[in-house]
View 1 (spheres, rainbow, N blue to C red):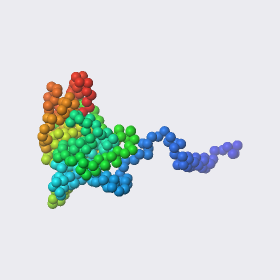
View 2: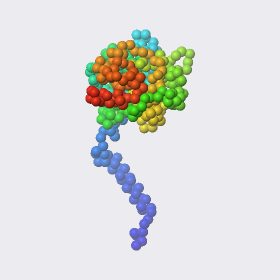
View 3: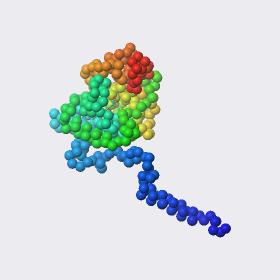
View 4: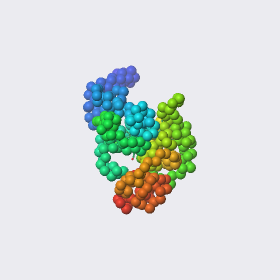
Length: 337
Ligand code: HEC
Ligand code: HEC
């Protein structure tokens, strides 16, 4: 009778031994426990601090990283060598491709190398990654294209390739592009957008949208980048489309939020995206030549010509669902932005 009495210390000892046994077995034979887990559990996001390969390859990747994080200084208006000034504004690539292209939901470079070359409707041809980078140079950076064989383009590609190596499919999907927002069936309201801006954006980007410069006698870049004015992206940039900007803003702004903890609702992101797109910014020439096949233009492309009878105002501020529906029924083209 006595022997069967419940003894708490025996129970605790047994419990601890059990845990210990599991721990040891688990450590020695992990595959027994994780036989079905995919490469996802072992994959990790590469870091420039700890994961660079040695030698020339590592040096090239590092240079790509520097170009992406110090764009203005390396290949923009702040470059010492005049011949190296390709970007026309003082943004850096990583102002939009956050964490040097390593953040989910901000057009990450993780996996991007594996998706090129690809069909590009803006030019209606199969485009390379070098050409895609130059697309951002001409529009987001309001500058000039660089020679595709230049060390700079090749270094940025090396960096993107390195980030894209051995990425499990599920991760590649998660990192790809911007995250979606629901597209409201009403027009974006810039008055509401302005209120959202005053509450959530103005402290950093300022009321004129021109951001905050690094303190000092001479201009040396921004603490908070401009989203308007001469140092901003031009009107041909993806960020100048309300739906694209709403997606970026919802999952990345105010600075510090991520896809796991957004602050704005989809509607707030939509209204504030419309509001910032009323700000003045540089104008790109020859925009009428974009999308040689006009049926392929994203619905919120704010500049014409279009192959539909929706007004310029509707292409700029919505409502977008009727335009999306039109292309679906008329051309069988499914658009999501
Ligand atoms: C003002 C914001 C902004 C800046 C600055 C910017 N980009 Fe982009 N970039 C975008 C947007 C928006 C897209 C996606 C456009 C779309 O969805 O059509 C994009 C797309 C890309 C893509 C394709 C991504 C993919 O998943 O297919 C690459 C590569 C790229 N950018 C490289 C660069 C590089 C390199 C720089 C700096 C030289 C740069 N970008 C600067 C906004 C920016
Ligand atoms: C706490 C400061 C802060 C707040 C608040 C903030 N931003 Fe930003 N924003 C940044 C920083 C910093 C970046 C650049 C990110 C980087 O380099 O890592 C940025 C980048 C951007 C960009 C792309 C880069 C560019 O300059 O074009 C846009 C667009 C943008 N923010 C819009 C907004 C909007 C809209 C809001 C309000 C909903 C907002 N931001 C709130 C700090 C802020």
